[in-house]
Each structure stands twice: as C-alpha cells, then as structure tokens.
Length: 428
Ligand code: BUP
Image (cartoon, rainbow, N blue to C red; front, side, top):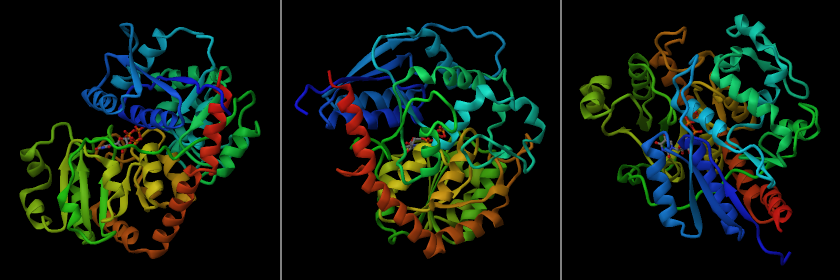
C-alpha cells in the first residue's frame, strides 16, 4: 500500500529484560518505514537502562526518544522490595487511562506463561499453595496441564505485588487491539492456537507472534578475544540473566560442575559485588588458575547477543529468561535450562518441548542455599553439561529450530507477515 506509514509510540516497562526487546521492536518497525517514538519512564530503575538507552538513541537517529515522568509512589503494606515491581506499579499509577489511540501490548514472556497470567483473575491459586512442591498440576482450558511446581511462588499469594500487577493487567487485556509476542508460530503452535481460538480465555484480542525479535548493531559491551581462539561450538556459555544472584555455595558448586565437565566455558557471573578479589574469594584462586586455559569468568555486563552469535559457542546453561530463550533460538543452539524464578520454569518447559535442549526438573528453582531451595551439586551439573555439549542429536534438533526461527523472520515468513499486517492496520 502507498498510504503513509504509521507513527508508533513504544513504552517499555522497567528493566533491561523489557527495554531490550522494545528496542529491537523499535528498529524492526523503523526498518518497515514506521515513524517510531520511544517513551521511557523517568527516573529509570538501573544505570544499565540509561546507559544502554542513550547509546541506542545516539546510534539510531531515526528513532525519537521521549521522557515520561513517573509520579512518586509511596507504597504501604509492602509485599516486595523488588525495585522493578515497584516501578511497574508507579508507572501504572502515572499513566492516563485512555489515549484514544489503538493500543497494542508487547509481551516479553512465553505464550504459555502469558496464558497463566491472563487466567490469574479466575484462578483461586491460594488454595493450591500447599501443593506447590508436589507433582500436582493445574488445568487451564485449552492448555496442557501446568505443573503447580512451575508456577512462581508469589503467584499463589493474591496480596503479593507481583500478583496484583498481573491481575490488574489481565483484567485490562480486552482493551488492547492485539498482543505482539516475541515468539513465532512454529515454536509453540498449540498454545498460540488455543489463545487465538478463544479456548484459554474469552474476549482476548488477537495474539500476534512477530518474533524472534531481530537484533541490531549496538557498539557496546566488550569483545572477548579469548573466544576467537576457541574451536567451533566448543564453549558452554553460562549466564543466569540480569536479575539473579546465586548463593555463594551454589556458585562454588557450579564452578566444580563446569570444571568437572572438562568443557570449555564462558561464565558471566553476577554477585552483589564482583571485583577481582571477590571472584577469587567466591571461586578460589586455585579454581581460576586450574581453569585458565579452559574457561573464562567475566563479571558484570557482556554483549550476550554477540557472544551467542560467536561460532565458538556450542551450548548455553541458562535461566531461561524469555529474551535469552529467543536469542539462543535464533542461533539454533541447545540450552541446559536451570530456571531461577518468575516465568522461567514455564519458559524452560516450552523451550525443551520445542527441541531446544534439556531441562533438569529436579534442580528446582535455582539460587541454592536457604529458603527450601536445593543446593545442586557440582557432579550433577558436570554430568549434564557433558550431555548437553556432547549430544549430536540435541544439537541437530536445536539447529533445526534455529532455521525455522530465521525463516519466520524472513520476507514471506510467518512473523514478518504478521508484523506487516499490524503496520497495514495502523496506517492512517
Ligand atoms: Br546478564 C546479561 N548481557 O550480561 P532475559 C543479559 N543481557 O546482553 P532476565 C546481556 O539482557 P527475567 C548480560 O541478552 C537479554 O536480552 C540478554 O533478559 C541481555 O532475562 C536480556 O533473558 C536479559 O529475559 O529477565 O533479565 O533475567 O527476570 O524476565 O527472566
């Protein structure tokens, strides 16, 4: 069509795991000639978000940035001190209810976890809380039974801010024109079909799979020359996302595990404060010395996309944050899933079912140490790493998923067509 391309405003929620997919979507829309304005909540929660955002805007002159001041929010009856949840709530309170423009939702989780979120207002999960550690399942219409042990614990508590946010969002879903998802039809076809057939929940706007979101060049994050010297597909990449810090005991066991596996590894370690001294204290000087030819431990922020794209990477020990799942899908690499919290167990199940690797259910929620979370021993971790890195069949399956993912995003592919359809609808 020759009509003028639409002007689209994108408003990401707090945290790198929301900002990153929105920036990707922004460039995808801009490359389809849309005028794009990126609205960002001020002040941001983390310094990582502001740094990333300014370098993105500096290198994408065609995308405009617009700051939105969030009203101060003094919570009473605090059920969480998670700064991201508090910012979600503050933002929710600060926005006007109806802007009289077509409104789409961009979802940053799996279709299966979304189905649980959308159903939360109708579920009396409180009464199942005592079974959350059992092998019982929850029946949601249209979906395969959902193990109670995969549901994030805060969701059993209706007073928890995580739950009140999800419930309030779920009751507003029908106001949206559509729900854009970072997934593709072939990745989780049953759930997407069930959502779109109205079997999961009635009155749901169309679910629009437009992923995996494409990446863009961002000249940020250090390049790792060490990787260039490693053989093809030989290195295990280890990262548990931007929000997880494991206990010291679990970090040490993980160290034993990767060392015992004998595999090469690149481990991005997040701890409260990770400087050289702390790395030595956490893992031991002798660990770093023994593994210096095999592996590399890096602290802080890396350019994960660039790492996953590197030919030396052969597998990913991952917490299964949804962005990470979609990034590794594009690369066609297998995952060893070790979910830590939130949607990650459900994401791990989806990834495993799609053919993207292994999920060791008995490892439970990660984190290690107290709070009823199991400490997973290095021997077990080592065995599974060997299995992941050595199983040709797993690699072949993951490679195939990667090919399908790329096809979906190519001209004429399912996700590309859906996105172009949305843009067509939005043309004035
Ligand atoms: Br850590 C890390 N570099 O060092 P997820 C993450 N990322 O580029 P999360 C880096 O941040 P949730 C790093 O590629 C992905 O796009 C990574 O999002 C990038 O996990 C994003 O994978 C992280 O969804 O969020 O942040 O733990 O709690 O939603 O699982």
